[in-house]
Length: 262
Image 1 (cartoon, rainbow, N blue to C red):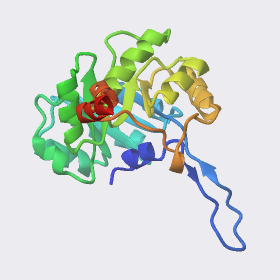
Image 2 (cartoon, rainbow, N blue to C red):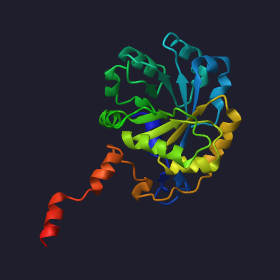
Image 3 (cartoon, helix red, strand yellow):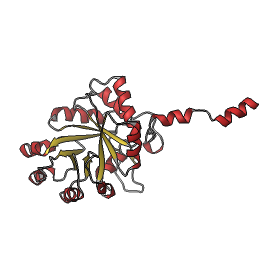
């Protein structure tokens, strides 16, 4: 299983203290939201220190004609949790990325081989945007995809209630783990609102090193998420999106007839 996907699934959970005598380890709280840095392979080649930013994972943007750039930045990525972002992926490319140490792939669906979905070891993250409709969201939910990366049409900063609603609409349509692209300088209140809305991770520009450090600290200081259920997980929107809520709330016709008879 992808280490990144496993980390996403553990966001906000508390790892209990080990049982037995002679143990000194305390319960550990995992990050309530991941911070993922993104940079092109060319930028990492020019400045390998970008990979030292305080992020939970790194996404390397790889141009189709420049996959060999990963070889040049292998040292910078050593001991890091990283994946690639590509416009399209063939089965051969996916195997090549895995061989180089890639843990997950962010891909556009149009030109990506369906064979990628059969790889149980590689994390599979589908890129979506604000134009995603409800039918597409339901179809994505049925695929063996681990997560969706949402890139809004406009910046989420400043984060208004309307922008938060727009994000929730898209998240509800895919009904799966959800990360999104944001500026690296969001405030603590904005981070908390996104986290409480079910956003499991933020993808930010690795060049914003100072903002990344502040944001990481702010995420670590966020209060416990409200409305958490058993196991520390918050209820997620259904796969069918908001239509499911409407269907669930509509009274049953047979029940209405019985009530009328009474």
